[in-house]
Amino acid sequence: MTSVAVVGTGTVGSMALWRLAERGIHAVGFDAYAPGHDRGAAGGESRIFRTAYKEGPRYVPLLREARGLWAELERTSGRRLLAPVGGVTAGPREHPKMRAVLDAARAHDLPVEVLKGEQARRRVPEHPLRDGEIMVVDHDAGFLRPEPAVGAAATAAERAGARVARYTPVRELREDADGVTVLAEDGEHRFTHAVLAPGPWAAASGLLPEPLARALTTRAITSTWFPRRDESLFDPGRCPVAIRVGEPAYSCFPAVDGAGVKINLHVPWEEIASPAALARSVPVAYVRQVARAVAGTLPGLGPDPVRVATYCDAFTPDGHGLLGRHGRTVLAAAFSGHGFKLAPVLGDIVADLVENGATARDIGHLAPNRTLRRSP
Ligand SMILES: Cc1cc2nc3c(=O)[nH]c(=O)nc-3n(C[C@H](O)[C@H](O)[C@H](O)COP(=O)(O)OP(=O)(O)OC[C@H]3O[C@@H](n4cnc5c(N)ncnc54)[C@H](O)[C@@H]3O)c2cc1C
Image 1 (tube, rainbow, N blue to C red):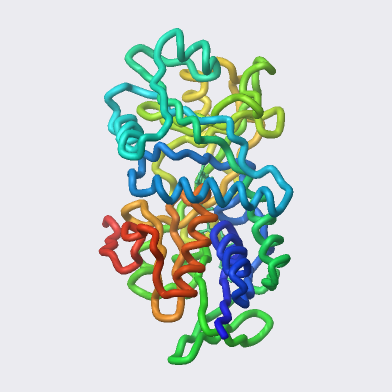
Image 2 (cartoon, helix red, strand yellow; image 1 turned 135 degrees about the vertical axis):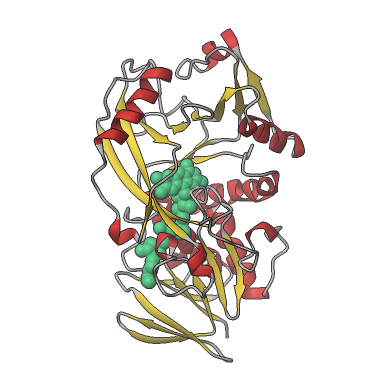
């Protein structure tokens, strides 16, 4: 009988556990912490969901499936996880990322609109455009609630028969012809298969095969929350999520907690040795940089952040994650700062790879055996 150890019940691992359990496959999730914690890649209150994908049209079918599975998880858990407020990408008309958004929309006939001038100002007053800029509206976009979503997936998995071993770090995986031995904090366990979803711990964990692990980097991403000047703006029930491309570049979320508007500045994110090395304090120079971006483009926000927090993710050199079989183990890691929205479909693909050794979904761009070289 198939039995699976899922190492890491964060974003992707919790979804994999849920999808495996739904198929009646015996699965145990191990986590160094517990589902829904904020030490890794899933902290910070909100994540963008979007379908007109500047990272490439190949993701669009996966995103469509992900949206259906988010709805299924909402039904199963009785929790609201995806706020379908829409999303906009704003910036110079000729910017390559703007073109990439439109290309993805065209390739898959997505319901996007292009706004400019007065029309954009009326529809999205939170994000005024500058001369020569346009706004692409993605009606299928919105924001996800990461911590509750991971908790909901783990609970759904447990209800479907999976077990979660909380506060149980895995030290080593030993694979042989018949199965995988998991050496965990609480002892040795035997399974027919393993799923490796250690998130930002991937590079330093010693669990991933070399030279793959060496190609990965762990990066810190800082979020800042700014106060609203006008309570009618950035309403979480109505205001779209936004990505600004060009200079400055950032993502911006409505006031999910009713007070702070979250800004993630898109700058080269600092490389760190491991999540254990994540500094929880942020240089003042960085805070000034975000404040300048806000002052220059978001007149509806106050000048200084009221909250600052840093999280991390694992990155590949080409910005696409790793998803595929490696012997009896499925690797699902390094989703490079954009994996949250995809998590339920990634989890379902993990279940395909465990159950059948293959998947009908197009995941060639995520193949762990592709050439991955770190830039010097
Ligand atoms: C600040 C920030 C903003 C982002 N914004 C977006 C966005 O708007 N939209 C989007 O789609 N994506 C976004 N992303 C990316 C997305 O959040 C990540 O790609 C995704 O959460 C990665 O999930 P994961 O499962 O790989 O990692 P995690 O969710 O961190 O899960 C890894 C889990 O493995 C466990 N673990 C690690 N090692 C071990 C071990 N040895 N034994 C047991 N357990 C272990 C950890 O405790 C953790 O629970 C953002 C990321 C960050 C950091």
